[in-house]
Image (spheres, rainbow, N blue to C red):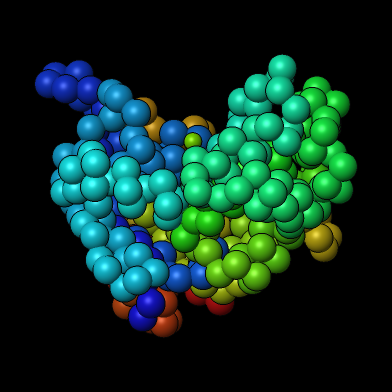
Length: 339
Ligand code: SF4
Ligand code: MG
């Protein structure tokens, strides 16, 4: 397997001592080269925490309390990111990792033209390039994200939100990253624009071969873009598998509820049943399965024992794992999770 990122048992807490709250509990996840991995779940489930901790970009008061993250560079060299010094990390991070976050488009400097901001990004990455080389690259990047090169002359306020977000993607691509982290990159945009950007990311991946961690609370968007999806709940991954299969046959009651909350962008809209209740407070987690207070299928055992993420004993499928006691035996699985 050609892995670019191998996250092993990663744990994160927010704060110290009595006030510490565990935000990520021994999460393991792999990202293949050229793969688009979707991370989904309601807000506060740990999606961003996982992505930022795995790349050591976690802001305080977040603290990594355990685990390893193995990163394999294009040259085949492997680095364990959590044990690198800040200097070593900087060398790795700036050349191999880029991030586009939700509010990114608002971080463009309003007083400078787009050209200047993109040229600066290119210069940081390619300090030895001539001005001509940088300008050619800037035009190329604009075209890559579907904006006419003339728009380089514009000021940020002269571009729509969708275009500004594409400029941010162009600036991320200026780094020629191996891993692109997109944290709710389209959440502030309308559905049509979301769709266009998502399609563009797939095309760019096909052309440039980078890997993507795409974070969103909207699973329907992931079905359009992701090769593989991991669903998070209360700081853990509760189901993971190929996007198409996870979408057609969710194995975890929470995944099923999420899918019902976000009907796909294309195809008939189904009734929005959603999931009753709200995600648990990380400072006061339920016992056993963290989802049990909201789960329509909860059993006695779910209240006391926490299920582990594993290949379903009842429905073993390659590349899929699920954390739910219903999967202990085929006879326990309700029809809607056993298809
Ligand atoms: Fe529901 Fe129990 Fe499965 Fe948790 S382990 S999702 S409570 S059935
Ligand atoms: Mg987030």
